[in-house]
Image (cartoon, rainbow, N blue to C red; front, side, top):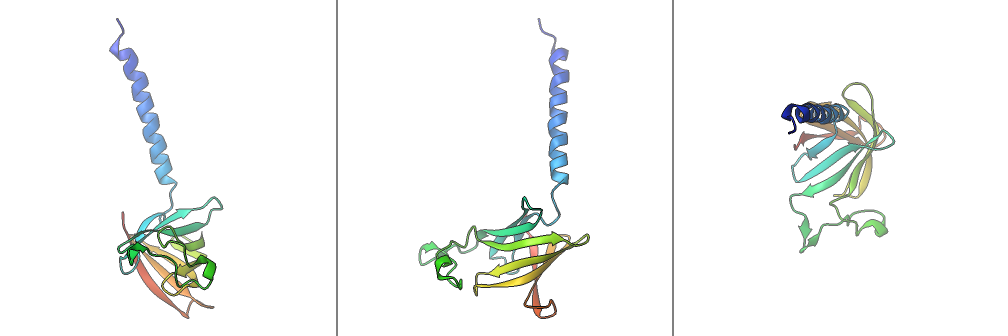
Length: 150
């Protein structure tokens, strides 16, 4: 007959290994990674770190995903070839690099409402992000606040 103690110790070791790997993986995520509501809570944006170490974000949810019974598309884009891209899945944040503990700079933000791309900085404030889009210098811009959706 097999001893239950003989199987118990390897099982406990396997469980502890899995838990420690999960904790280590969680600790490696950056504070801006995750899902965020935009300022008017009609979209969710998922921010993640790319293989190049820069942070990017894409729209993963819309409160109203349809227009005239069809998925909303990037109809305001200046490039006519891109106007049929679905809004859900659209990359709107690109190229952010950490600059200190809570700031991310050198990025771009695309606004599908007007089809324009702006320079952008992000400041992490706990459960909110301050998103500052601007043209030229940061003083000539606008800041919105996004809230964590998770």
